[in-house]
Image (cartoon, rainbow, N blue to C red; front, side, top):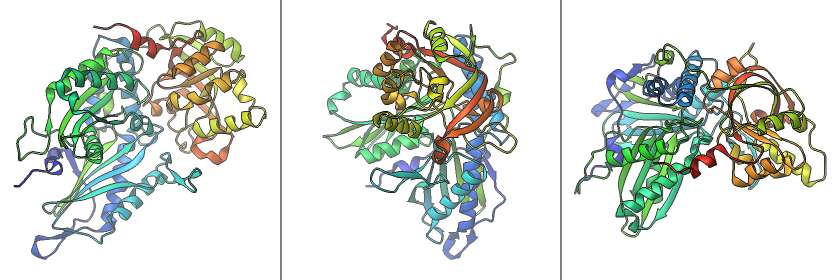
Length: 535
């Protein structure tokens, strides 16, 4: 029996979605075959990873525009406008959309009548590496040099490639750059088939969506996979669904089908997301832009359930190589056209001077209500995972912590390299939760009393902040180009330069929008939302 495979149902859009690149067309060979030049694959990858680092898909910008025009939540409107302003700045080609320029991923489908030199992945990786180095995109990939030791590769390689055989004489690709914040929102569990009773599944999905929080940079595109003939198939389908490649799956199936899409469950997912109250990071209704619910075949004893998100920096571009040429999906060149005529302001925002004794600053911030909006001006120091590991080592060895941890708020960030003449590259917050394990040891010593990042904190970290009179603030994740150009006045490395993008920097800010998340009593804005009874 012939069965339609998942890869035969992929959505590659319409011909009008693509631009023909100025690259040699594949060479025609006998028997209807075509031969692809590896130099063209390299150039295609370089262009694709450049485009998606600086430009959004048009449907993403349009979706932000809909939120920006919606009067139901001022906080959501403000964040959506900031994301659109960010996209307009990034589209100029200097500041990437996000400081985390992601893991370079490429899915490929090579037609049976397409020939090449057999080293396609190497050509694609060379193209990706050139995009990351030539355009000063952040290198985030760590290479193991031992089981526990690692070092940065410096050019964001290795490329993660998944190339499979397909029918016909086209070579199709989907290029993606997945940031760590959104990748970390991925979950996979092997459930009991008893979950298929309906209410149990809905409760499980509600738990997953509610636990997403804001650390993956919403508004999200949610993807859910129910089933799979193994967890590997479920996770691959999750990746394809989050990229929009499974949008054309049928809504009913039969013995010849392999999967289906259920719009009813998608509506349930969107309603659950809206009901969380998290909104587009600062509270509201717009946690999710869209949802995809995909059902796959499964073994009778197993029920994989996978969920993931695409973040606000929805970096994805499809490409087609055929006898007619090399074609790349068009990205949005003018996202500013989706901005409303009058942009909203952050409601009730208080101006905060960061350049004063940290105890004094922490007392003022900690006295505000969780959810209070702020405009931050003054000096911060950046430190994230690697630097915090160094701080932990100093504490364990009985040595003094660096003085700057007592003098300035700590901003969890790793910006991109600045273009010549600019104060900073794209500058945005990383996920606060990864530093939670260090919080008690620091704040109990009077260090890092005020911290700035994105998303919520663990109960233990929030308690440590409250017990020691500190405060935690969240900034908008996914607006790093805007922050780098308009809110960063200066940036210089002051410690651990060998850590590259994770080095400690002294950064001076000007009116950076933020929200108080954890107050001086340890109350967490996002945790309070979870506990609040909702309709």
